[in-house]
Image (cartoon, rainbow, N blue to C red):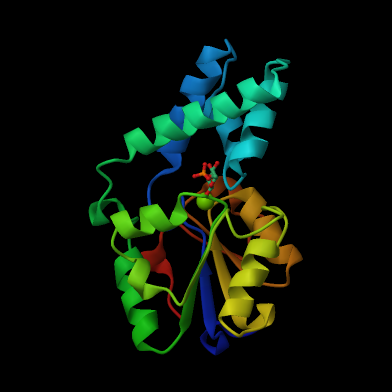
Length: 213
Ligand code: BG6
Ligand code: MG
C-alpha cells in the first residue's frame, strides 16, 4: 500500500462523510415504508447506505414482499424524495460532519485534487446548501453514472476528471457498498464515522479530525 502523503487525489462520498444526512434518508424511507405497511428499522437501513434511490426502494419492497405497478413505483420514489428534501430544507454549513471544513481547506492548500463521488442525485444541491461545492475539482453524482455503488464507476469517473489513476487516490466512505466500490476499483478505501465498516476498510477513523496525510 502506498504512503498516504504520496496520494494526489482525495475522493469523498457525500452522505455520512461530508454531511449528516443519513438520518434524513432513513426517516424518509421509513415514512415511505409506513405507507406500504412495511416495517423498516435502522438496522435494515444500514444496507441502504450508499445505495441508489431505485435500488433502495426495490430493497424495501422486497423486505415486505410487496409488489407495486411501475406507476406506483415512480410515485413512491417521488414521495421519498419530497420527504427527504423537505427534511433538509434548512441544511447549512453547521451540518458538515466533524473535521470536514478543516480537512478540505488544508488539503486544498497542499495542492491535492478533490472530488465528490456520491450515489445521490441531490448531491450538487446539498453541496451548495452546505457551501463547500467550490472546494471540489469534480463532483460526480447519481445522475452521471450508469452503475451505482457497489460498482466502482462513480469513483473511476471522479479519478478520470481529476486526471489521476485509482492508485493515486484515496476514497473516504461511510457505507459498506462504497468501501466495496472503492476497493474493487483499485482505490485505497478509508472508512469514516460508521463502526460497522471498520473491518472492511483499509483504514478507519471515527471522524475526519483523526486523519492526516
Ligand atoms: C447515498 C445515500 O449517498 O445516496 C443513500 O447514502 C441514498 O442513502 C442515495 O439512497 C441516493 O440518494 P438520492 O438523494 O439520489 O435519493
Ligand atoms: Mg455515504
